[in-house]
Length: 269
Image (cartoon, rainbow, N blue to C red):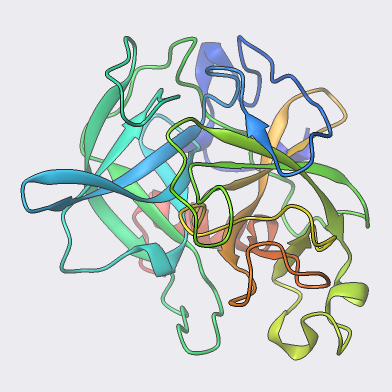
């Protein structure tokens, strides 16, 4: 029950958290696959207005009726944003999906774009969303919890299907086992570029996150069967979307629970 030691603003009410109505079909397909529709109901598309059109820029995770978790590097103060919820196919009108304008956006005050540190932001929806079978929040992990090496987690998003390839129309999922900090920080892996406030996953040279997945979740199942967002897609290899020994690097959500509670309560960080 420790994962529920957060402010009530992150409690999902009658719908609970991390329990999809339509559970994901979990396979080990190489390179990822189309997700079962609405099996990751907390996955959102962060979109920005460009010449009168809304365009997908990053993923994100719904964690309450009002708040979305994403990456700091996804936010540009010059842009106007909205959050698309309940989506499976980004290029089709889908019943049950909703678009809500972004209200307050809070980027972690220690965000360092040069060294990619503290890559986390919270987006408050302009109006709270109503939970449905297609729109539900993910759970949050226990504060300061560390995932063991090879924990089976899943990345989800609409990122590029391969290096230099097109952005996916249909939500993708892929198994990404966790790589421990001890391994990921070795010189021939990511070395000093990773910190204890990050989670590495993948790195087998077969599947990873790619451009457009940024800000999206690393979904890991808890012992009670619910899904928690343990990571936020932060960065990967600039050489390829699936380069050996260069796993996708995520902001470790469990390191920022206190910060998230402070932001959601309206208390200055």
